Image 1 (spheres, rainbow over the protein chains, first blue to last red):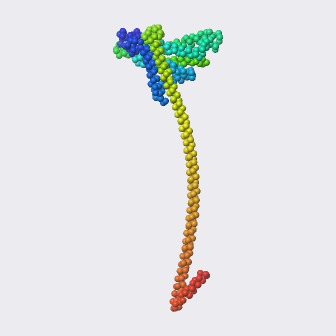
Image 2 (image 1 turned 135 degrees about the vertical axis):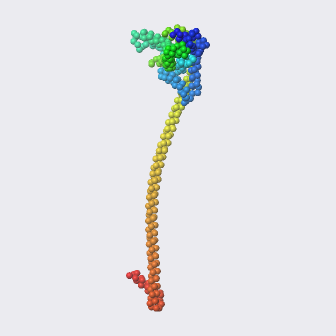
Image 3 (image 1 turned 30 degrees about the horizontal axis):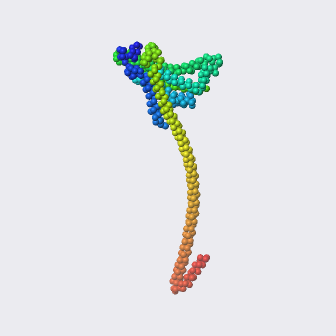
Length: 263
Length: 180
């Protein structure tokens, strides 16, 4: 295991045959995360630009695909969850969805293999923005009732109100941004670690066999890791989309609870 | 094993241990700026473009449906007209055929009547011709008989006879014969 860690991490000081940098920019030894974040934003901007610069009434395949993705947010999330008032929040929800998805997909792009959403800064930033919108809209629509209804819920027996109110306040106001953050962060970190371990191990064993340092029998473990790694790779495709969808959906649900409290 | 994995993940991501959970300033600033750019693009470009596109598409589809309905109504009206015209044409054709049949019957009856009349006329004329020929033949025969009789009588008597008186006598005789 130590060898594997060294091989994946610090191959310059290890005497192993495997020497694969975690990503291309590691070669230049500077913090590549902001660059990846910028790349993700540029990818989203370019996607929107090329899909919608000259939109056609009868769309081509590319435009239809982007429109379908956008309709997931505009129709299935904004309008279905929030209702007609949700239209106002569509630009924010679209930004969330595509920015997170682009970040998640970076895990699977050869040469990058790093989801910027697995860095605490990104999920936390997005969750805090969502939290601010959620609280500000709640106060704007409901005034102080936004807080008092949470702390002193009228639908609960009086004796239980202090306890339920405390739980509601903490879960709604305090925990929500962290749960949003950790859900995305943990999923992407887990996926990233699994992929790095499985494919790193596969590479370590298979290249060892080629180099003659590892027997074929032991090297077959690498083949097994490779197969599982490919399966996880495909699974991460789904996870990347799903986590972007879930983050956006929960944002819509929170906004809805602020501006449509009767729901 | 788990500790190793975490160490690996933390180091790959550029941090160790608790650092993994603490956002760095460059990443925070980069994240906020990048997201702001994406948001502005969505807010000012992508969403308005999509809205306009969907509205135009909605209008186009509604217009096409309306147009299709108008064309369908026109086609239905044309079809009704054609059906009416075909029905009229059939009726007219039947009338024409019926009239032609009636006319043909009339013509046929006329032709038959005319033919009959003509045939009767031909037969009558033939009869008249035959009768006139008969009487002419009778006159000639009578004249011949009278001449022969006179010639015969002259040869018997040996003298010539008064031809006019004899002729009158023969005629009177023949008249008596016809009368008898």
